[in-house]
Length: 497
Image (tube, rainbow, N blue to C red; front, side, top):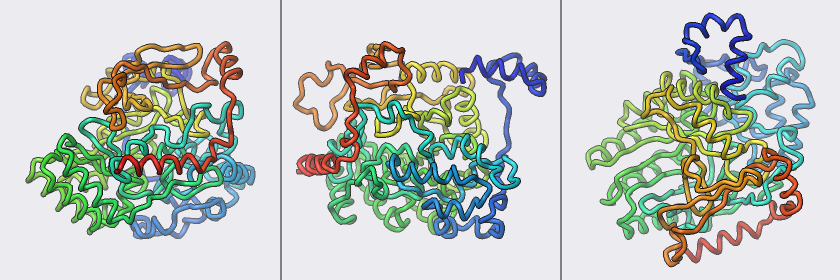
């Protein structure tokens, strides 16, 4: 939906006319919205869950939905059998991530739909934006081009840039430290689907070779030997899955390295499992690290991943406030633009204001969904991303206006308006860069080369789609190829030595 279409809908709704008039006919009518924790007892499987249980991180982890059987036990006959069959088929034939949804996150699906008789939630669940990326079903996926011909398991070539196992040195002054390969929740569109989570029928996951202690020591050793690195994103997986004592130990050692000036903890669990960050031991550990960071002039921030306004609840705001109280300097959001979830100016602005006003989380980036297998139903074109960026400008404070970025393979994050040239018929955009990645030290053409990114084929004009039908035949077997993971492993091993 375009922002102009949204205006038309608002005008056609008599109940919205007064509010629309009060907004001085602005395309987006801002309204402050109070956060609400949906009542989990509306689902049959949680009718007897107490508030104390709900607030417990241990209870949340123990009651994650991991398969269709458990979802049936939770929702019962409120959802038709056809939905469960649709979900089961997707897990067997398309999913690149195994199913793992914490109760907190599942509770933000169909938050206001009335739960009546049998099948009463079926259509609402099909349409739900959080469900669309956390519990994708087979009928969500495209059948013409389920994967782009250039889709790859490690679409950003992060493994090729490992300076040590799990440590991606992609940018001149920044590294990504993947401490572990698990999360409290698995998103269907995960860009690290090659490494993170359990294997699926489609993807045999890459496994770390080193023991965790040796892997983390190798990362720290590299950072001690590489003074040009000042910024470390501590991720995975999700740092919420690392015991706080081990995370604190790693961060404390990281803070001993003089050149490290910024540390960012990446955790979707601030939204998906906020109860984790409210535990006494976690708060105490974060507090000790934050005080040490402040004493050494280092910025400690948390980066989370929220894709829809419905996910921002009072529990999320409470966890965020706790992190501020413990001394974390900032909490920022890095979402992903997903068709059917938030690829709409109103949805993006609703999310940004809910984050900013309700939870004091800074809208930071929205990434275009990466070129991974079976993601075409989520992805949008560069042109549509530019349109979204245009339509969200001017409403939020400048410091809280997120940039929509395209993470171009071998290039990195680029604001969508930085495209060097763009063949809109074939959906091929061309990008340049101003630095070398860690695998291009001896490449004289790295800074003058044009790098390609590809729009979803179904968004192209018929001439462009015809060109891809002739030149871009899918090789389905490549999507399952375990040898791709093995090649990444071999390349990473060579890099590390």
